[in-house]
Image (cartoon, rainbow, N blue to C red; front, side):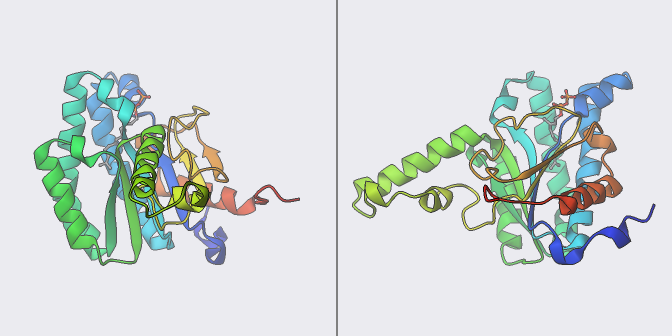
Length: 241
Ligand code: FPP
């Protein structure tokens, strides 16, 4: 099937966010260690970034590590951190070639020092690119993000820069990690679970949700296109009739 012809490039979602789930199950089904599932997941990451960039998606957010993921066995956490480091090392040139801006959303300060340094370097060197913004959610949790926004807003009130009566949804939005970005039009979740798992809680208020049974390492550019086509068939009403 040629999906390429069927995507309406004039009605692309501006922002697509993905909950990349199922690496562990992918590995278990093959009798492999969980980390092999994550390793295979990195390849899917690379393919989907390229596809999104070619399609013309302006913002792509990938949930790579949640605040809850710190509770996984130390070996798995360390392995994931190493994979992220390797990924940045290997893909830096590719990101630059594709003029992709990298942004970390989440508690970057909790990442290992070496990884933090690399993330900052890639963010600085890609800051001026405009072809696509890649938000990498690392040590990210929606509730923690909202608590952080509350702290920032409280500071502004305490310093007299803002009145309580002036706090609006827009003010909250502009204090999130995703400040200035459009809300996700489409949230994709792989491997079948029907939940948001603390992902972009404020931003996804009106997002369309697409859930596929496919495990993340098996998620192909073709299936990404399928999700976009599915999105384009939906009627979005934003609470209106
Ligand atoms: C969920 O699968 C996946 C993760 C917690 C990590 C996602 C990380 C990657 C895809 C690789 C690194 C990312 C980048 C951007 C290079 P799971 O382990 O919860 O799977 P399970 O539910 O089947 O156990």
